[in-house]
Length: 305
Ligand SMILES: C[S@@+](CC[C@H](N)C(=O)[O-])C[C@H]1O[C@@H](n2cnc3c(N)ncnc32)[C@H](O)[C@@H]1O
Image (cartoon, rainbow, N blue to C red; front, side):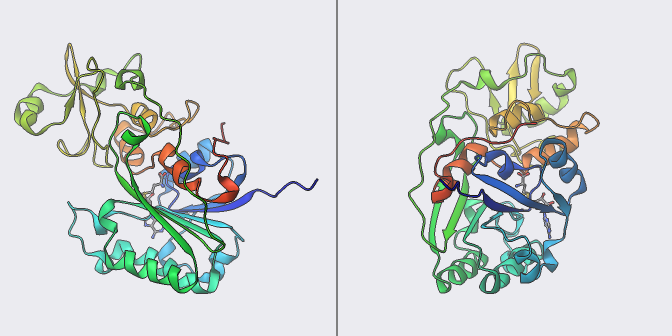
């Protein structure tokens, strides 16, 4: 009997590889593209795929087609659509690459396309341009706003996911909920650098999101790329017997559902690691969304080092 060839995935805005981490063995990443050299370094440290420095602002349909990918996975910058940003949408230079890719759709037409962004993307002009391009080309489209808490993970990260298929899509398959308490995501021996100054605690305590790991219902707020730089609204702090501490990048990776063998290269500073992991993806949420693609409906994880 003939075995089906793996689904070929082009990981656009790949960062540290949240999509690669979510893909089942029925898929293979043909290329992973990003402008951030440090993110690419982390990607290459963990995955064997070709990870290349490419500025997507200048993509041509022929460049995208050259990878003969069945699925384009896109995690474009969210700043043009966030409540905290200026919501400049199509006028924000960080939307340029996505607008470019939308322009390439008519000529390139991948069998599938999927995208993750903040919920504020829905209703933006960029969203409407993407939806009408897909509709005009006859893609079936599904959208879902999903938070890892709905998958039993004690960490908020509500995001909009869009998946589109030229030959149709199946129903998304609900992933088995994790239902592990927040305490189970903590490092056994957290680094002393994670504890915060009392001064910061006193100054911002009223505005900080503080979680007590002894509470079974504790849920950490969304960790953004500003964690460690911006004291408020960038992620939670942990209450401990010796004061407040930040969550480590490894703990955040656990919340995001990366496999235990995913590693941050040792020379990466904690500040840089926070920036990269805060930009990444909830792996179980991505699996949930990709399950709408009939070839990937089996789910599961493929890659380990
Ligand atoms: C939201 S993050 C995506 C993170 C990624 N999915 C992950 O799992 O880590 C957006 C990424 O887009 C990259 N990026 C932004 N503008 C780009 C452009 N014009 N071309 C290529 N990559 C770009 C950033 O470097 C960043 O890694």
